Amino acid sequence: MFPGHDGYKAAALRRWESSGDSGLDAHGGYLVRVESFRGLDIAGLARACLALEGVSPRGVCLHVTAHPKRKVVRLAFRGGAIPSGIAGAQWHAEHQQLAAMLSLRCGAAVQAYSLVSGAFEQVVTYGDGRKVGGERLEYADVELSEEAMLDDEAFARVQRSWPLSHLAHVFGLTRELLISLATLRGLSITLEDEVAVDDLDALLPGAAPHLRMG
Image: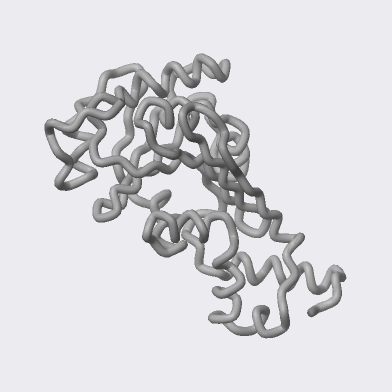
């Protein structure tokens, strides 16, 4: 192992930052696997969650993207009182009401996640409206072997045990694909308006029109 000194920590942080996680330095949101958005009232749910969090919905939208084949959906608040960048990732780490309420509404596990390149990643799981698990990894606390510092494959093996890597495996995705959901164009829902379910289900080709969630 490298000794735990400042030079090592700086080298380790450079390794995290060059690991190809995504084109974003920091982001957060909520992840869930659903077959259809019917019966979920995503906009109404988001408004109710912000009210419980004491956040004004004015100017806020909910950005929705998906991996169509795996039916994995990412939701994240944007605009209005919601900060962006590192502050936005921290905001999502601290505001998880949507994950709790969505897990109750759709009857599935929902993960609230945050990622700040070179700093930390966090995943908190909700089921039936309650927190049922979670893990936060501070990159500065991770010790790497010399092999993992220098070799991409060795580093990838270490990374498999990290919270977002484990979640990606559960979803049947690679870590890179899961994290890249934050970079997709997707659909932005203005919370002051209603949203057509068909527009949301267009993100999930093959969604059953008769399927009702909750």
